[in-house]
Image 1 (cartoon, rainbow, N blue to C red):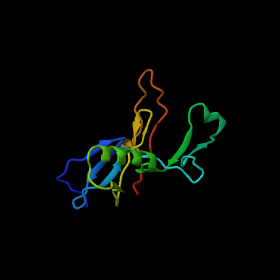
Image 2 (image 1 turned 180 degrees about the horizontal axis):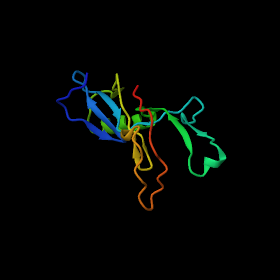
Image 3 (image 1 turned 120 degrees about the vertical axis):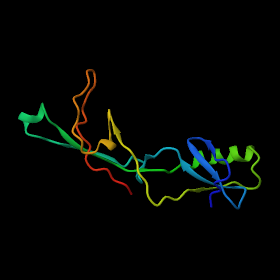
Length: 142
């Protein structure tokens, strides 16, 4: 269990919390989500572009972006963290365990719009801005 009275460690884009019972055990969580990779090593990301009536194509367009993120940390980074903890004087073997999450939320930002603006109509694009995102439909949480 995480010891909330102990100071967390931070490095390699990961926050480590000491365990309340074992000096060499730390619970870790990534500082930011990353794109999940499939079995073939490609990111779980897809973009569907809708083809509209050619007369409307110059004025309107649509698409759907779908992606999967996680808070995983690759093994190489975990090994670097173990070495850093051992070098700092942590007694015994260092054990790193991920922090479990029951729920979560992630914000998606496209160009200059946020998923917090869900369903809101777009304001006119400021001069010099691309203004491609008109609205974001459907936020989801695991």
